[in-house]
Image 1 (cartoon, chains in turn orange, cyan, blue, yellow):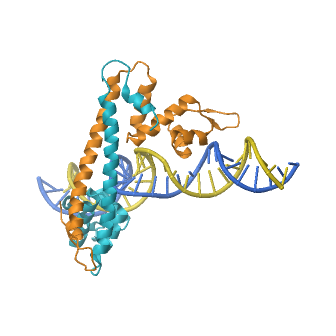
Image 2 (cartoon, protein in one colour):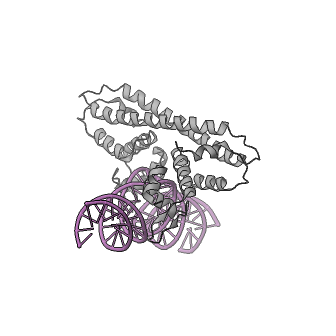
Image 3 (cartoon, rainbow over the protein chains, first blue to last red):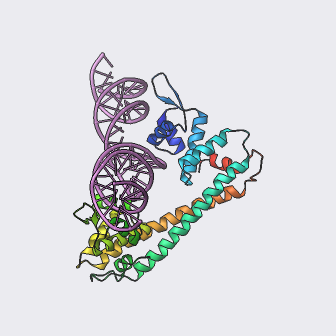
Length: 129
Length: 129
DNA sequence: TATGGGGCTTCCATTAACTGGAAGGTCAAG
DNA sequence: CTTGACCTTCCAGTTAATGGAAGCCCCATA
């Protein structure tokens, strides 16, 4: 299978797939004409990557997860640890964003948003935390 | 005031301040010895930047907000529009993270996390969305 | 058989917002 | 006079791609 079809199936841009090969997340074979030839396993990995990236795992997390995925004898605890750490990080990010949202939301609410120059948003941004 | 003190007061690394000068967000004077000399207005801008960046505004947002901040005659509506758009973006990000969290959280919960190789997390990541 | 339009290849540059490090000038204390 | 903290510039690297140029390759149609 050529890169275009692999891209469609995995839901990733072809450019991204070439990049993943570049950083050695995948190593597809080549046809006689030099085109990349993706087999089922490659496709599986690409789908895995697409999904894991969408869940916010970093590339290095993905590399580790792929290694575990390929290792028939790995313990599920290893996987759970990586996923658990990532989960905690997501929770931190959500909390951060939530506090940003609260601050910015109240600034926006206090602003008249009319033609006058006085603006509580800018005033709020002037103050140190 | 030298960069080290400005950095402490604004709550930004000196490197970042140099970078902000590089991209022309600030233009501090120079002392005879070549050291940057920060005045109150510079410091004010740096504090503004520190705070706005912490609230997730992009550098280009900050540039626009600083221009409005320096413009005595701007309408608060202009500021409110930028802040409002940013607020909507934060809300989108929170929603995205929340859905990631839900998916990943349920994968993690179903994983025994013991020494056995079977792992619902990896199985879940194999499936297309 | 020519040609046109996709699709494929590599390579190089760019993005955002810094951060790290090297090499060297400046300053105040002891 | 030396030491150490601070300051300077410049260059490179980070993350995870993305954009674009130049040039093959393949298939269908005129």
